[in-house]
Length: 254
Image 1 (cartoon, one colour):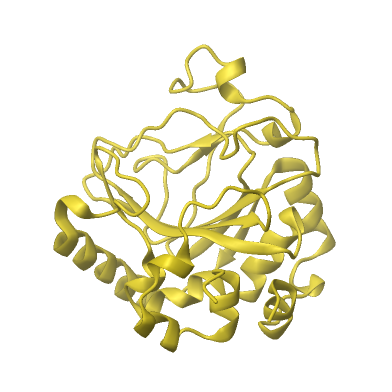
Image 2 (cartoon, one colour):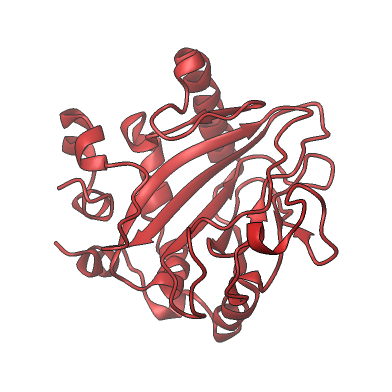
């Protein structure tokens, strides 16, 4: 099965997005998809991530990345069947393939919980070089498992920055400082926001009293040479046996 066949089998099709949504994603570099997870699903997933973070302790996130002031859990496909939905939802995949095409594979599936008083990141793009507009290699889906608000620090982005053919480290004196043209991605728990990963973005400080949870479904163009997790090597045999053929194909695990 090819990635295109997997996408077609999952129901990925152009009519999953409106013309206005595609145009907004092209110009702004991000797209709110609205509520995708039900309230009970959000609670179940958030609780499972907290359990995994506690169980893994200092090793949490080490398959991908650790970060002071956050609890990260990586290689989620291997951790629980509940996480397969994060790489197989047709509307999410339609938006991702609109950005990077249908020849895609999962680079990583992970979570990030910013703890109170933490979570600020320097503005960055998830690619090492500037690219021509339209020639994109990476795209992310942010699944919000808490309400993202000004209080708890919804992810900050600079709309349209994916079109600048410039990296933030080459343009900004202080990438952690707020920028006059930035906005914060805020939405209700259960919502998904797609963002072109060439867009300048970064976590914002969590000024609330509770962790801020998000799951990140990060895809790349096949052949880009940039894969964060080798799922063919990472996934256990039991995980490969339970995953659908479509999920295995998109994770490049077969």
